[in-house]
Image 1 (cartoon, helix red, strand yellow):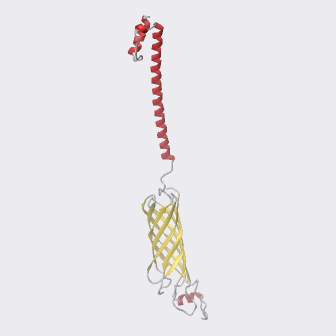
Image 2: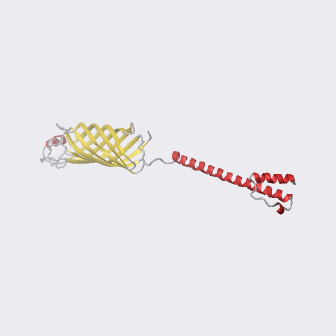
Image 3: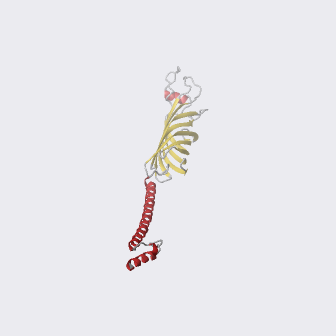
Length: 266
């Protein structure tokens, strides 16, 4: 009995028993032993439950952190990163032009433009450009029955492109291209008149057109890309065209509108 009482008092001093029944209320030593064991068991279980909750919370935190980190590494990047290595552009083109040195009026050419850009750095790219245009031009009054002959232009240019201000919605680019342009000016000058011995080339000269020739040409301007996705954009590109088909250098306006496709990574 004395040994059991000492154990009970030790358990109480350790904080394992919240209350002690009066000695008068203890029927016997067996009941005191049972109460002591119950209190100790309840304290231990409560600590185990608390420990389990803390461990579960820590594991949940680790899992959420790992999931967020995985999203950062494996999830989609920003919609437009401008980290592409290559860029291809294709669109419809318009260009103002004068098909003869002394013609009183200018003409309008329409066609297509295809441009490939290789980005050397984040902002500087090397561009290879082809433009093919055609249109009819007014000419001087003539006896050959020629009123608005068809003129063809094929242009191949190379140069640099600089990517300027940009965000997720749009990008502003600047470019300068130079190359050669081959013009065919007698394609529609066979004539339907009654002049004997007239040739298409002779008629072209007679009505004020250039002879067929290849001359230097330059395109200086910029473009605005309106992004539709990471890889696709709509481009509007105005240009100042500088050419030397005649005896002097002349400037004209050009515009193209089309689609940009970005591919590859730097």
